[in-house]
Length: 99
Image 1 (cartoon, rainbow, N blue to C red):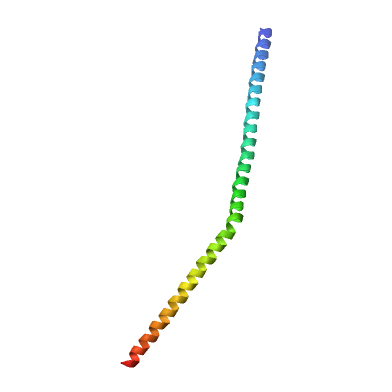
Image 2 (image 1 turned 90 degrees about the vertical axis):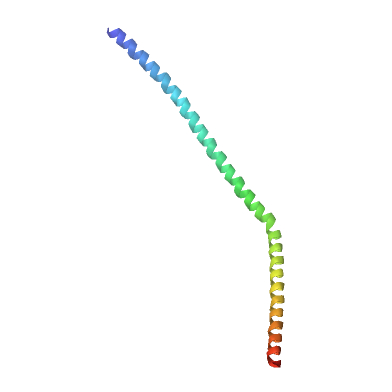
């Protein structure tokens, strides 16, 4: 009876060792996957930030020129409207004086 218990314990220990080794292999795979996922996420964000900065560097002169053109159009429009407003006020004053 004692011999059968020793054999049973030995079998159980061998099964336990086999399951532990399988678990160890699975955990190593999970850790490997996690590391690759982290590395690829970092690479993805480096690319996103790099493309954004590159686009800003490339398009900044075009944007500045466009904004300068817009400002000049706005200034010329406001100057023209100021002149027209002044002319209208002067004409109204002349009309009042003549009445």
